[in-house]
Structure formats: structure tokens, C-alpha cells
Amino acid sequence: TADNKYIISGSDDTNVRLWKANASEKIGQMSIREEQSVQYRQALIKKYQHMPEVHKIHAARKAPKFIKKQTEVAQVQKESQQRKQSNRAKYDKTGTEQFVSDRKKVVVKKID
Image (cartoon, rainbow, N blue to C red):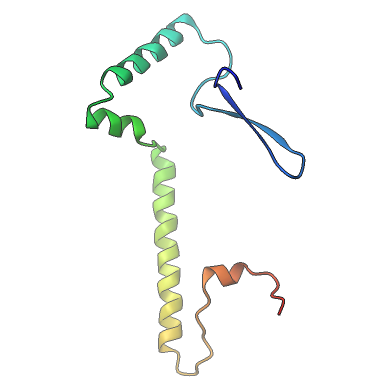
């Protein structure tokens, strides 16, 4: 949009979506105190943007601790399953266990 607050996107299936340009920005009217706080934070970022520490803090994506921990647990579980599958394929004496990549598991139907 003209005020750079929203992004409009469209797709082939005739859906139009309206996105906030700044995802953490609150929609609606802010109180005077909230507006002053946002302006102060933006002024600090602009003033000290040349410092690498401020740039790292500003660019870092913060996730809640619970979500971060769940993501780490899911990653460990995925690696464990992959290691188990590869060990089964490696040490199978009958030769029936075959390694199947995750991409091939997603394929629903293969046309030759």
C-alpha cells in the first residue's frame, strides 16, 4: 500500500491476501504512551545502527523459549529416526531394508 504498512499479494486461484509489512506491529490505534515507546525504540535503533551489537539484536529473530525447545526436540527426534533407518539398512542381513529419502516418501504417484 502507499503508506508501506501492508503488502497485498494475489495468486492464480483468485485469492488476495493482505499482510502486515511489520509482523510485530499492532493493528489499530495505539495509546500515546505506546506510540512514544515505539518512536523511542526506533530512534535508538537508527542512532546506533552502525554498531554491530545493535545490528545483531535488531536483526535477530526472537522465538518464545517453549517453541525454541520444541523445535530442538523435534530436530533431535528426526535425526534419531534417520540414524535408526540408516543403521537398519546398513546392518540388515536379509537385504529387505532399503533406505528411502524423505523426498521420495512424499511422492504420491510416479508416472513413467
